[in-house]
Image 1 (cartoon, each protein chain N blue to C red):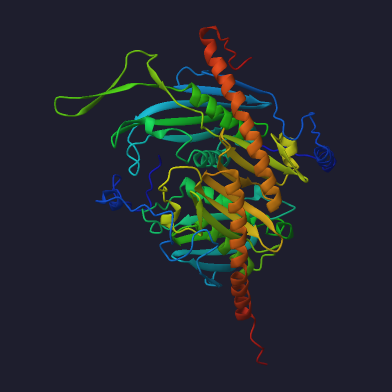
Image 2 (cartoon, chains in turn orange, brown; image 1 turned 90 degrees about the vertical axis):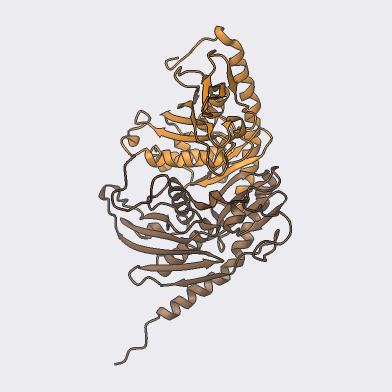
Amino acid sequence: MATVKVSEAEKVYILHGIRDDLRVDGRGCEDYRHVEIETDVVSNTDGSAKVTLGDTAVLVGIKADIGKPRPMVPNEGYLEFFVDCSANATPEFEGRGGEELGTELSNTLYKVFNNKHSVDLKSLCISAGEHCWVLYVDVLLLQCDGNLYDAISVAIKAALFNTKIPKVHISADEEGAKEIELSDDPYDCMRLDVENVPCIVTLCKVGHRHVVDVTLQEKACSVASLIISVTHTGTVTCTRKLGGGSLDPESIFEMTEAGKRVGKALHAPLMKLLRQEESLGKTRQKVGFLG
Amino acid sequence: MPTDTKRVRGPEASQSPSLFLCKPAAVLPSRGPRADGRQRDQVDVRPVFVRCGLVSQAKGSAYIEAGNTKLMCCVYGPRETERKDETDMKCGRLTTDIRFAPFSCPERGSWIQGSQDKDLSLMLHESLQPAVCLHKYPRSQVEVNVMVLENSGSVLAHAVTCASLALADAGIEMYDLVLGCSIHQDGASYVVDPSYAEENSCGSVSGENQGGLTVAFLPSLNQISGLQSDGEMAEETLTAGVRTCIEGCYKLYPVIQQALSRAVRRAAPPPSES
């Protein structure tokens, strides 16, 4: 992970501030930084979103391909995640440096979506046992300033909301072979229901308190953090402890409770914002990457 | 995709025969006793067999058997860091590696490390790091290699226990032993130390509370060094699950301590002849 070096005096300063619920940039312990979300930024994808969380910028592109379903679940499609830490974010990621972080992020995303209700996989089936939609979710880290998991999960939710999967039509040929036809109308597409897609909240243990949405400086002062992925109903789909320190069981219970509270509160404004952006339609001002 | 030129592999399109079963595998009932006679909703871990010092070449080693899950771990170190540019002047490095033998799971795996192996290695590293006194081994590296010989459920939990035992056998200074325990939540009931079938059961009721949880715990210090859960659970279920895992670790503690003291007594030098 990109790191900054923090002096002992600065660490003490940050620790004492957090102890009094005051962070370096004036936020409270459970406040997020300024978030900007824009969907439909890349035209070649079936769905895309760009999220800027403070100085962290993440771009997600989703492409839908027709593939063969997994052998054990023939009537479901599936999602494949790939996180690429580009060297743009920090020189540490040059070459294969970012590969470890990328694998860790992808594996966590697989776990977060490894349940029946996050995405309705049955709707991705075209014909059982033969064809299904495979959604390739590719995440690109553009800038890295801490709190990657949160930014990535919000971007994935926005991109899935934006995804338009073309409607297909199966027709049987003369020999009995199945033919897949894509409908001609580019607006005739299927949308995904993203109500149950979870969002990840990262809580870092700094001193005796836990902090949401850490910057890199604050992360250098913490020994361990807990990521918890929460749906809009408060169901927890994945938790994971990160970092080289250990946590008290009581802290873990406190952090899961706080994470669930913060995560649950994140969904309603996010969905409202996405629907609002969608409703603007053609009048929407495209901000793009330089705004 | 780079091809593997060192090993003879089966044909590309080979499939496991279990896909062609006439009737689907029976869904495990979520009520009533478990397949191996243990109780649900109780901290009923499988009896473990542990031995230290099996591998003569390694500095420390341990072998653990819990039900049909068999793992062995070797520890090498402390020795000089291989990659000089990553030498840390103040504290040592711990490298962990979990590998599954291709014959360990019901479906044949490959020798090349997949992303699941890398993920488990990372979690093992996070679980062991708080316990090892790395500041006592500056500029050195300690390597922990776990090999899963048979996967019959809760591999990560037993790998953590085995690895910390091997580290103790190697004489690496630690704050405490790290013990692992896992549960699988199925509806309203849970099973501790699930077997492979119980871990992968989809559950008869596709409702809430389906998932697995693994906890790595330091008993004397009462600290959790590793936590991992997936599936979907309510927060209260998760909290209760963590408490159950901690209880499971406490149950395992005397067995591990006894195995370690037996190994030390066996390795004690014989009285000198002259």
